[in-house]
Structure formats: C-alpha cells, structure tokens
Image 1 (cartoon, rainbow, N blue to C red):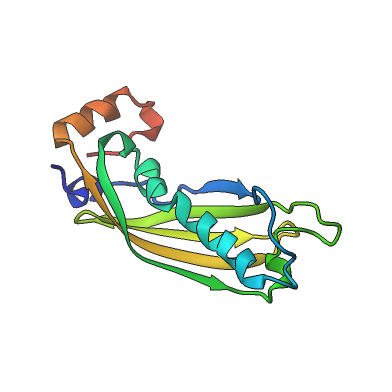
Image 2 (tube, rainbow, N blue to C red):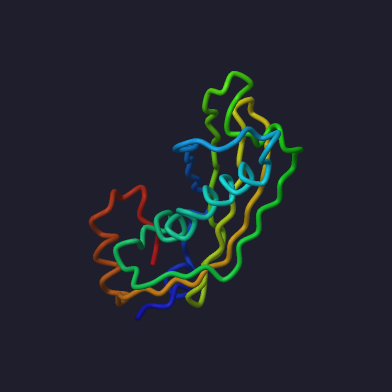
Length: 156
C-alpha cells in the first residue's frame, strides 16, 4: 500500500482544475415552492464525483481500493432564486462546478469546488475531506508515470 504522502511530496500539479456541468434530471417544484430541493440538487452535484476528482487529478485512479467521505460542507452565497434549476420559463438551467484538490496525504485528500450559475455568478463553495486508500507500490506508480507524456510526468 503506497502512502499518498510519499507520492505527493514532489507533485507539481496542484494547480490543475476540472469543470463539470450539471442540470437536473426529471422535475421538481419551482424554487419559490421548494427552495430546499434546489439546494439539495447542488449538494448532490458537489458530492457525486468529489473524491474521484482527488485521485483523478493526481492520476492515481487506477490504484483506488476504497474511498469514503469524512466531511462535506457547502456554503451557499446567494438567495434561493439564483440556485433554481429552472429559469422563469421552466427551462432547465446548467451550472458549472470548478473543482480542484490541493492536499493529499496519509490516505486523506481534500476536494474544493466553486459552483457557478448560468449567468456566471458564484452561487456556492464546497469543501470535502475524504479517505482514499490506494493499492499500489511506489514502483507500480513510477511505471505508470513512465507511460505518461513527459510534460505531464511529475518527479518522484
């Protein structure tokens, strides 16, 4: 089992980010009638891929044994209306989630995100702490790195 600390000590890719676009599947009442359901849709979107982002951005997803969320916080920065998953005409609205990780050590990782509304407004921020267990030796990870493009390969 490789400790994430050992792998990440010289990792230089913390500035990498990923974007996810989301909208609702199905239907829920309008935001004026069920604001909490619209907030729950954003909670779900911020959680569904979060721990996979940590191992994905660190290019360790092939070695995952298990992952578990330890804490998940979402801070909403707006009133309910900008969080609504439908516009005034009842059409679905798309939101963009910008995600990144800046810490992974001792089998734990941190996921950060900003959720942007269709009008470009920053509507929410999330942070999640997760447990990530990898099944690999340092040699196996180094072999994987050798197959990657040279400009994307960090020093180990």
